[in-house]
Image 1 (cartoon, one colour):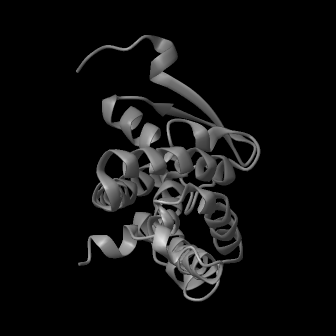
Image 2: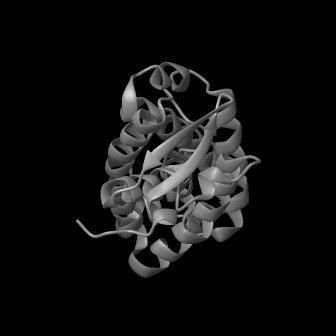
Length: 189
């Protein structure tokens, strides 16, 4: 195994007024990177909101590069990576659903954007509705959160993303812009 300097080997994390020293091998660094969204989850204020904001331009770029297919495939890949990394990270820091895990926000926000990905004007609406759904956790999101491990961490945001995507698409349709929103339906044809 590759040797790391002491700074990289140890990370001090305050949890419930105690200090946990985590050994950082390659797998732990990868787990930390994915679970915390590259460290966004360690921001002191509203890490989930920040992660959702960072997810917006990434979703737009993914859609520009590969259309709804690339965005859809990315959602599935991040979901699978998220189950693994959030489960491992939560067990490393001994918390059920750590607030610093934000990979679920990326997945949920991308899902919220998927139906309107071709029209960037609705990204802000999708963002706001997703954050509301993620915070309020309407049925069945709250039930999904009770599933143990990484699956539960990820599924409540998937549920919130579905709510946000449906409501954003309804708003876009109500405003009469459905002709600019073929992204969800073009790959189904």
